Amino acid sequence: MIDNWQAAKLFKQDREWGLSCVRLRCANRTYAGWRYLRSEVKEPAYADRQTASAIDKYAWQLSSWLKTEASKNRKQRRSLKQLHLDLKALGFEGSYDRVVAFARKWKVDQTDRGNSASKRTQA
Image 1 (tube, one colour):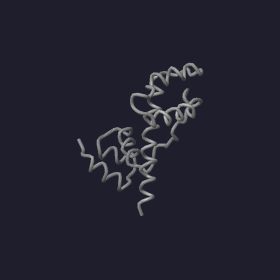
Image 2: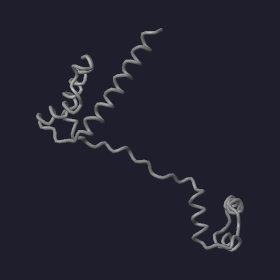
Image 3: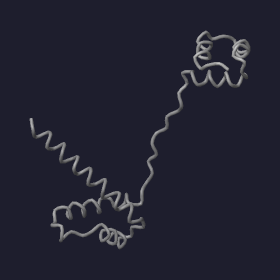
Image 4: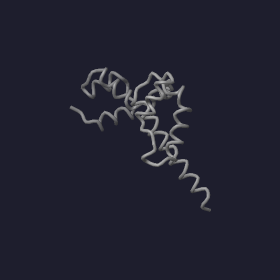
């Protein structure tokens, strides 16, 4: 058996296929795999998928509700379940989980927006 460093050394010398395989005592396919792994070829990079969500139509309405609910006292606020039922009444066909995920993302965005605003005012 040969070590990986021996295969790399032969690859760097860029010897002929047949001679390298005879010296390594391996099949041509094995050596071809090593050559491919050490080549400069990169895997293709695909753009992230942008798929439409069921909540996209109602995002503006839900974000306005979340903004008004955030300013209320804890006892006065509507829960996310209640907001989900209100969205259902408007024709939303998505699940409660989508509403919760949107609310989490909205809350993170609001805290990030607040943090970045406070950084700009402190000079």
